[in-house]
Amino acid sequence: MIETITKHFPNLTPRQLEQFAALDALYRDWNAKINVISRKDIDNLYLHHVLHSLGIAKAIRFRPDTAIMDIGTGGGFPGIPLAIMFPDSQFHLIDSVGKKIKVGTAVAEAIGLDNVTLAHRNVMEERQMFDFVVSRAVTDLSELARLVRKNIRPGGHNALPNGIICLKGGDLQAELRPFKNSSETWTLSDYFDDEYFKTKSVVYVSVNKR
Image (cartoon, rainbow, N blue to C red; front, side):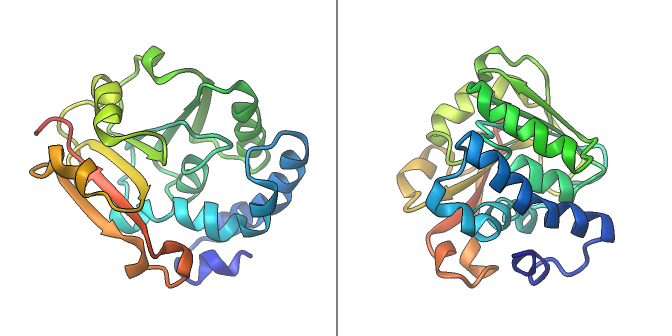
Protein backbone atom coordinates (compact mmCIF):
# COMPACT_ATOMS: atom_id res chain seq x y z
CA MET A 1 0.00 0.00 0.00
CA ILE A 2 1.18 3.49 -0.87
CA GLU A 3 0.78 4.46 2.82
CA THR A 4 3.83 2.29 3.50
CA ILE A 5 5.84 4.86 1.53
CA THR A 6 4.13 8.10 2.61
CA LYS A 7 4.54 7.19 6.29
CA HIS A 8 8.33 7.34 5.93
CA PHE A 9 8.56 9.93 3.13
CA PRO A 10 5.81 12.47 3.87
CA ASN A 11 7.06 15.24 1.55
CA LEU A 12 6.47 13.58 -1.81
CA THR A 13 5.13 15.70 -4.66
CA PRO A 14 1.78 14.85 -6.30
CA ARG A 15 3.75 13.53 -9.30
CA GLN A 16 5.83 11.21 -7.09
CA LEU A 17 2.72 9.99 -5.27
CA GLU A 18 1.08 9.21 -8.60
CA GLN A 19 4.15 7.30 -9.81
CA PHE A 20 4.53 5.26 -6.62
CA ALA A 21 0.77 4.49 -6.58
CA ALA A 22 0.92 3.18 -10.17
CA LEU A 23 3.59 0.57 -9.35
CA ASP A 24 1.20 -1.92 -7.74
CA ALA A 25 -1.01 -2.57 -10.78
CA LEU A 26 1.94 -2.45 -13.18
CA TYR A 27 4.04 -5.00 -11.32
CA ARG A 28 1.05 -7.28 -10.72
CA ASP A 29 0.23 -7.24 -14.42
CA TRP A 30 3.81 -7.84 -15.56
CA ASN A 31 4.54 -10.39 -12.84
CA ALA A 32 1.69 -12.55 -14.16
CA LYS A 33 3.54 -12.67 -17.50
CA ILE A 34 7.20 -12.53 -16.47
CA ASN A 35 8.07 -13.56 -12.92
CA VAL A 36 10.36 -10.86 -11.49
CA ILE A 37 8.94 -10.92 -7.95
CA SER A 38 8.09 -14.12 -6.09
CA ARG A 39 4.36 -14.87 -6.55
CA LYS A 40 3.99 -15.07 -2.76
CA ASP A 41 5.70 -11.71 -2.32
CA ILE A 42 3.80 -9.55 -4.78
CA ASP A 43 1.35 -8.53 -2.01
CA ASN A 44 4.37 -7.13 -0.14
CA LEU A 45 5.53 -5.04 -3.12
CA TYR A 46 5.58 -1.72 -1.26
CA LEU A 47 7.18 -3.02 1.94
CA HIS A 48 9.69 -5.60 0.68
CA HIS A 49 10.65 -4.00 -2.63
CA VAL A 50 9.76 -0.30 -2.90
CA LEU A 51 10.40 0.78 0.71
CA HIS A 52 13.45 -1.50 0.92
CA SER A 53 14.87 0.19 -2.20
CA LEU A 54 14.21 3.60 -0.63
CA GLY A 55 16.37 2.62 2.34
CA ILE A 56 19.20 4.08 0.24
CA ALA A 57 17.43 7.47 0.44
CA LYS A 58 17.88 7.31 4.23
CA ALA A 59 21.66 7.02 3.77
CA ILE A 60 22.08 9.67 1.05
CA ARG A 61 20.02 12.32 -0.70
CA PHE A 62 21.36 12.34 -4.24
CA ARG A 63 21.98 15.89 -5.41
CA PRO A 64 20.81 17.06 -8.85
CA ASP A 65 22.83 15.75 -11.81
CA THR A 66 24.14 12.72 -9.92
CA ALA A 67 24.62 9.69 -12.20
CA ILE A 68 23.76 6.30 -10.69
CA MET A 69 24.00 2.79 -12.12
CA ASP A 70 21.85 -0.02 -10.68
CA ILE A 71 23.41 -3.40 -11.41
CA GLY A 72 21.38 -6.61 -11.31
CA THR A 73 18.24 -4.47 -11.21
CA GLY A 74 15.84 -7.35 -11.96
CA GLY A 75 12.46 -5.72 -12.57
CA GLY A 76 13.78 -2.32 -11.47
CA PHE A 77 14.89 -2.45 -7.83
CA PRO A 78 16.29 -0.33 -6.31
CA GLY A 79 16.60 1.83 -9.45
CA ILE A 80 12.95 2.66 -10.23
CA PRO A 81 11.89 3.70 -6.70
CA LEU A 82 15.10 5.78 -6.40
CA ALA A 83 14.49 7.40 -9.79
CA ILE A 84 11.01 8.45 -8.62
CA MET A 85 12.49 9.80 -5.38
CA PHE A 86 15.32 11.71 -7.11
CA PRO A 87 13.91 13.04 -10.40
CA ASP A 88 16.89 15.37 -10.94
CA SER A 89 19.41 12.51 -10.93
CA GLN A 90 20.06 10.10 -13.81
CA PHE A 91 19.72 6.33 -13.40
CA HIS A 92 21.07 3.57 -15.63
CA LEU A 93 19.63 0.12 -14.83
CA ILE A 94 21.30 -3.04 -16.12
CA ASP A 95 20.62 -6.75 -15.79
CA SER A 96 22.01 -9.79 -17.58
CA VAL A 97 18.48 -11.26 -17.94
CA GLY A 98 16.68 -9.66 -20.85
CA LYS A 99 13.10 -10.42 -19.80
CA LYS A 100 13.66 -8.63 -16.47
CA ILE A 101 14.86 -5.52 -18.31
CA LYS A 102 11.70 -5.76 -20.45
CA VAL A 103 9.59 -5.45 -17.29
CA GLY A 104 11.64 -2.57 -15.87
CA THR A 105 11.49 -0.72 -19.20
CA ALA A 106 7.71 -1.12 -19.45
CA VAL A 107 7.18 0.10 -15.86
CA ALA A 108 9.48 3.12 -16.31
CA GLU A 109 7.72 4.09 -19.54
CA ALA A 110 4.24 3.63 -18.08
CA ILE A 111 4.91 6.04 -15.20
CA GLY A 112 6.80 8.54 -17.36
CA LEU A 113 10.23 8.21 -15.78
CA ASP A 114 12.42 10.25 -18.09
CA ASN A 115 15.55 10.05 -15.90
CA VAL A 116 16.04 6.30 -16.44
CA THR A 117 17.76 4.20 -19.10
CA LEU A 118 17.75 0.40 -19.04
CA ALA A 119 20.04 -2.09 -20.78
CA HIS A 120 20.25 -5.88 -21.12
CA ARG A 121 23.91 -6.09 -20.18
CA ASN A 122 26.41 -7.79 -17.92
CA VAL A 123 28.29 -5.30 -15.74
CA MET A 124 31.60 -6.50 -17.21
CA GLU A 125 30.45 -5.10 -20.57
CA GLU A 126 29.40 -1.72 -19.17
CA ARG A 127 31.93 1.03 -19.92
CA GLN A 128 30.11 4.19 -18.80
CA MET A 129 31.20 6.15 -15.72
CA PHE A 130 28.92 7.05 -12.81
CA ASP A 131 29.01 8.77 -9.44
CA PHE A 132 27.47 5.81 -7.63
CA VAL A 133 26.72 2.16 -8.27
CA VAL A 134 23.75 0.77 -6.32
CA SER A 135 22.63 -2.82 -5.94
CA ARG A 136 20.27 -5.01 -3.97
CA ALA A 137 21.57 -8.39 -2.79
CA VAL A 138 23.65 -8.92 -5.91
CA THR A 139 27.03 -10.29 -4.81
CA ASP A 140 29.80 -10.12 -2.22
CA LEU A 141 31.15 -6.59 -1.66
CA SER A 142 34.72 -7.43 -2.65
CA GLU A 143 33.53 -9.00 -5.90
CA LEU A 144 31.19 -6.07 -6.55
CA ALA A 145 34.00 -3.56 -5.97
CA ARG A 146 36.23 -5.49 -8.37
CA LEU A 147 33.54 -5.46 -11.07
CA VAL A 148 32.44 -1.82 -10.84
CA ARG A 149 35.58 0.10 -9.83
CA LYS A 150 36.08 0.92 -13.53
CA ASN A 151 32.60 2.52 -13.67
CA ILE A 152 32.95 4.93 -10.75
CA ARG A 153 34.46 8.32 -11.46
CA PRO A 154 36.64 9.81 -8.70
CA GLY A 155 35.53 12.72 -6.52
CA GLY A 156 31.87 13.67 -6.39
CA HIS A 157 29.48 16.44 -5.36
CA ASN A 158 27.33 14.59 -2.80
CA ALA A 159 27.63 14.26 0.97
CA LEU A 160 29.44 10.95 0.39
CA PRO A 161 32.35 10.62 -2.06
CA ASN A 162 31.50 8.61 -5.18
CA GLY A 163 31.31 4.88 -4.55
CA ILE A 164 29.08 1.83 -4.09
CA ILE A 165 25.81 1.79 -2.11
CA CYS A 166 24.28 -1.65 -1.48
CA LEU A 167 21.22 -3.05 0.22
CA LYS A 168 22.41 -6.02 2.26
CA GLY A 169 21.01 -8.52 4.76
CA GLY A 170 22.42 -10.54 7.64
CA ASP A 171 25.79 -10.40 9.39
CA LEU A 172 28.17 -8.27 7.32
CA GLN A 173 31.30 -8.34 9.51
CA ALA A 174 33.36 -10.64 7.30
CA GLU A 175 32.23 -8.95 4.10
CA LEU A 176 33.09 -5.48 5.42
CA ARG A 177 36.52 -6.42 6.82
CA PRO A 178 38.45 -5.48 3.64
CA PHE A 179 36.70 -2.08 3.66
CA LYS A 180 36.96 -1.18 7.34
CA ASN A 181 38.58 2.19 6.56
CA SER A 182 36.38 3.07 3.60
CA SER A 183 32.84 1.99 4.44
CA GLU A 184 29.78 3.12 6.35
CA THR A 185 26.68 1.14 7.38
CA TRP A 186 23.10 2.17 8.19
CA THR A 187 20.77 -0.31 9.90
CA LEU A 188 17.34 -0.02 8.29
CA SER A 189 15.49 -0.99 11.47
CA ASP A 190 16.56 2.45 12.77
CA TYR A 191 14.29 4.01 10.13
CA PHE A 192 11.63 1.40 9.31
CA ASP A 193 9.83 -0.38 12.14
CA ASP A 194 8.61 -3.49 10.33
CA GLU A 195 10.15 -6.83 11.36
CA TYR A 196 11.31 -7.35 7.75
CA PHE A 197 14.02 -4.70 8.20
CA LYS A 198 15.49 -6.15 11.40
CA THR A 199 18.49 -7.68 9.60
CA LYS A 200 18.62 -5.28 6.62
CA SER A 201 21.30 -2.63 6.09
CA VAL A 202 22.54 -0.05 3.63
CA VAL A 203 26.29 -0.27 3.05
CA TYR A 204 28.44 2.41 1.43
CA VAL A 205 31.95 1.69 0.17
CA SER A 206 34.38 4.21 -1.28
CA VAL A 207 36.26 2.37 -4.03
CA ASN A 208 38.93 5.03 -4.41
CA LYS A 209 40.23 4.46 -0.87
CA ARG A 210 40.92 1.09 0.78
